Image 1 (cartoon, rainbow, N blue to C red):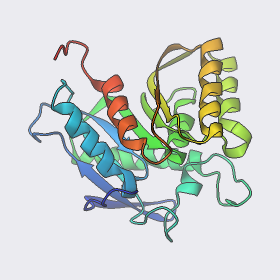
Image 2 (image 1 turned 90 degrees about the vertical axis):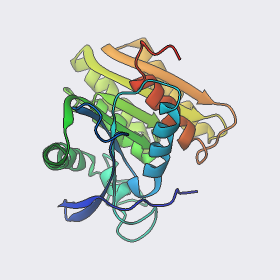
Image 3 (image 1 turned 90 degrees about the horizontal axis):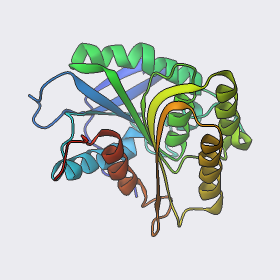
Image 4 (image 1 turned 180 degrees about the horizontal axis):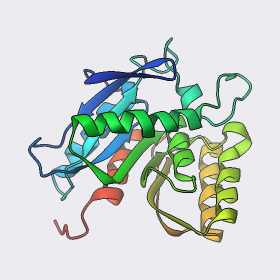
Length: 252
């Protein structure tokens, strides 16, 4: 079930859409800057889960002072105004004719949202994270498999690799044929009670990346034995923040 929607911090218009931004600064907000950013897709429904995962993890581990930013539409899944099928996918498919806006949305995040975050908050120019589940995870991986990816910390929970006849696998293979290095860290996960296609498609991606690895791409893989497509989000966020951001000197 979707988490309670937090109060918006501000709005930003682009792609003929009024995006709703949710923000949770580090605790305390006076933490030493600059702050690494983790952008949360499907912010209307999932941002509260990412914030809770960060709070829970920080109780027992040394985390950097992360700035969490949820990007949403002010509208939940399937509600009028929610454009996730357009923004998070690289091609249209039957039943989603407005799909295919991923590159335009990625450009919006880089050229409009990020400068606005830098104007408002003391953010790190070097560590740029993005977290998503399902279609959001598909987009996060789409952003990763670029010649020079802007986002270098990728948290992908149950990615919808099936979209467009698994076009993401083609994208990753084409990039690997063109270059051998991809400096980034990625956390890939899925619940083992998810659909067989969600599980096997992620297996295919991981096998592909293992067969022809990118130099500099650090992968963390996780399977959640008792979780399905819906209740795997929080453990994926918890595990993903841990593997991507917990400081290695932390021995607690």
